[in-house]
Image (cartoon, rainbow over all chains, first blue to last red; front, side, top):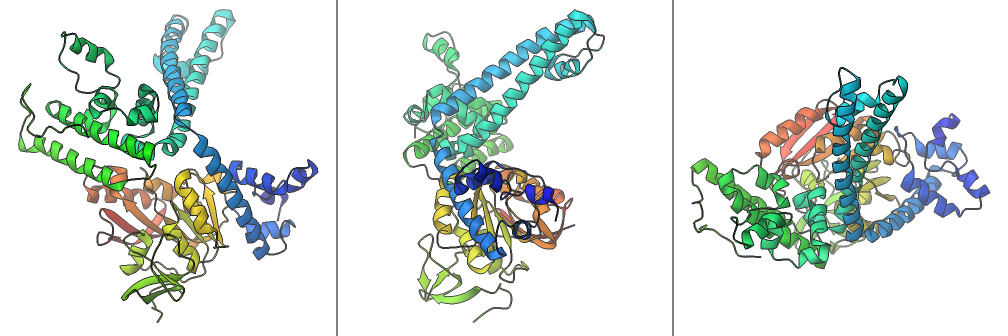
Length: 304
Length: 212
């Protein structure tokens, strides 16, 4: 056994923790929750060799106590993650993305005047940021590109956080819409409860407020979809069926938000029903049926 | 009445007038019991379905198991009843709360609130040379999850995987989804057996594989 081997295990560092006067169970819990290593090893044997446990059985007893405590604590903490935190995360992500793109344009324009091969966009900024600048102007242009890269990385980190936290807030909505769209819907409605209380016709056009008000003042046709356009079920359905697809999806998303808010249980039938409904709508493209423009939709569904 | 195809500790028992798969342990989800044995419902458990359908799982009882996608602990509680040390990885906090209840009376069931797509976040807890990795995760990239977790398996260990077609692509033909998943799986594993679980789980493929 080498020291480095045992050091990577969750049980390592106990002596230091004890010296610091930490409660052994608390410390083990933190190491289970936050530790990382690439390769698993024969932890039971290493722990016995390192004097952490008297025997493999003793090791497993300690492991169980630590994992149960760690999991219980993390469950409690994650359940505190609420819809308001999710809204902050998704808005911060959107701002980071927009700002990164705007700044990337500026950086590219500047870099293009200094270097021959400057490309636009985040990737272009990445290439510029990797350059060795000469002179003050180049230093500033390269530094600006580096800010763009950092901001894009922050955007990605926020997206990962949303992936992790959104399922705890709204499991059914996330399963149906994916973490990002689910978070955006919650943000647009102002919370999970307000979203759960909206009629599905409103959910259908959330994010298309400009088009909706243009329509209400008589200047435009009614919008078929808002932010839910980004969902594969809408975007990848042929244009003449998108209204039906958006209506069906919005109906089920509304139900998903209600189940998430009022019960919190996963409801499999909801996802199954949407899948079947979408299969029916998409089958129209194969049989050549079309929705008559502006006419009544024969299978129009009321709000759920 | 033990069955040679079943791991030790899993038997077909007479419970509530029916012959059913069963393990010995504390009930977890209101399943019927008789004489300390609890019925293992193949319709609620992919692994239960695989055993019922006669897959050669290589499980003999008493092995070390890594279970990915433990959810509320329905299946993993049965696994912990007949296997040895059982690591149960679940990502979502709400089901993990029920998993903790299932772990309460089982002293070799270790619940971990971790993301199965990121094995480096639990490789400092889960030991090496695991005998069986059981995977039932409902996310995209199920083959990728299996590949990343191959690091835990012993050379002759088994991957027992249920691929859920709808988690990969809700609109594609399940057969195509399974082919794509198997192709990716073959980069890390030798696939020993595959069969649809439709009798118990619609649009699921059961897979037994061993690391290359």
